[in-house]
Length: 97
Image (cartoon, rainbow, N blue to C red; front, side):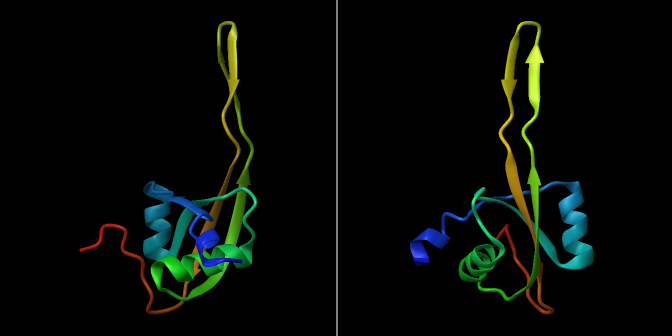
């Protein structure tokens, strides 16, 4: 896979109260990723973008929900999240001190 394509695998970090607790406790970071991304491509993309070593990856697919009000219905998009565990001594700083 080309290096330019790896930059399109990770869409955004998923930041919430749960993900900050997971990051503090288990050295795991959560990212929204491209729906067709696989574990090896996610690992290469994280290591390339953040200059860290990845220990393991867990992928979570969520189905889109049907939402509606009165007569109008729509769908929320399906998403894919990757829980990335880093090796000991590595850290990702989103703020950038």
